[in-house]
Image (cartoon, rainbow, N blue to C red; front, side, top):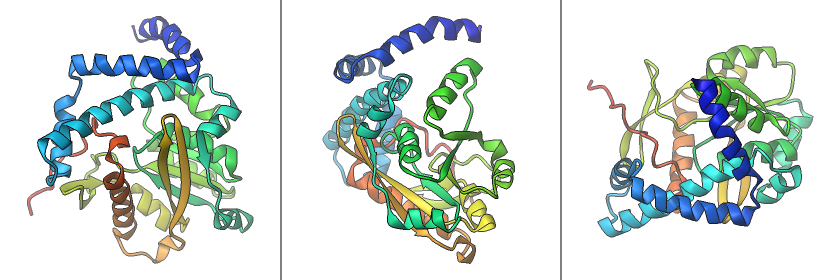
Length: 289
């Protein structure tokens, strides 16, 4: 059944990916109205926005909600566009601003750990980094339940040379690649479902955070780099690397996770529209002590 679903859907997805960018965004505008009619996760988004921005009135919250769904339609189609994007298009639409200190780390043989959130087009961030840097990028991901769509996403994510590793194989992969100069990337703002997550306040709410990126950074003493993604205009992004910790082994427990959370939070407050508000980020509650 999973194969049948994929075979029926894939031709339409590929046709969408073949569209010129202008036509793709016309389709996105149409898709937005379908989202409005369907009401897909609208209450989830509204609740997340209300709890995150208690200072905003209901009119402001609904405006943000509508702007978010417009962006979500763009993001979905931009992700599909990766199927047919050329190297030139990837470089033009998502510009990585190289840093001298990052090149210096490579010349010194230092691998790094990258942390970022579901903010802006994180799927385009992978090719952007790979095409602009010498570090071998390895993105940690969670496989899709449908293996055929998972294979499609794997081809999209690796087409320009990026490697990907399932989350449950992260430590094994990092150990095996220890003699190489790598950049291991974590999208680190998902709801943590582990037994002992790190708890903090994020966007005015109790929030669980995965401890894996911090523990691995400290274990291997790989500098921690935050990727700041900004949207310049529709379909165009900038990525600027920011060094958070050069010597993670010397940090206190929770220090890396707290700094990442605060950095992502500042970006969301500056431009709330392009974060993944339809994700049920706060479905887990802090245990009562």
